[in-house]
Image 1 (cartoon, rainbow over the protein chains, first blue to last red):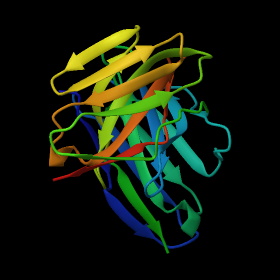
Image 2: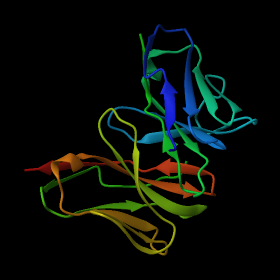
Image 3: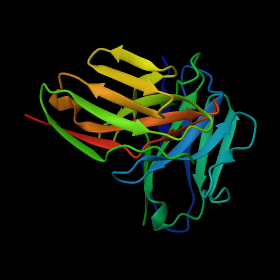
Image 4: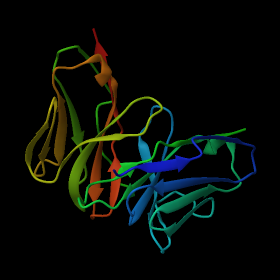
Length: 116
Length: 109
């Protein structure tokens, strides 16, 4: 149990376009979802915390108008990178929390975004 | 976000024991998790400590000292497949997780 999927796994887009990444909890209801980005050989940086039905809480330094997060249901959150630039190229990973234990978060497989 | 510090890289031989340390900031701290990540993959959960002391799970153990704002992951009987990056992640205010800088473990024959 506790499977989280992400789609797409890889995406290449041109500068100036927008890209949407989906994160789904497949077999549980995720009260909270998290979005992280990770540059090569670096740590996971928390971008935002998303609770179902409410606005996402963004970390300091993360542009909320550039990284649009929607948590429309207990099983789906989306991250849209708007007007993408090459510096937005990164590995984006979501995680979902909904288990009985406070510390449990389940990670999706990640999305590799390349902006050309 | 909160800052968690780890050594950047550790090298050990097969069969050895290695300890990866993590220090964290205390304000709002609730507990400390450890994750393993292989290149190109997602983090996988290893352990969690909310209370002081040692938690053992097979070859891996994790320790927490809240008074010292410090924890460690202990890997025993190292195997080649343990070569990966290891991250500590602290839970703050019951609400969000911040990850450490990561430690790359190289296991040599």
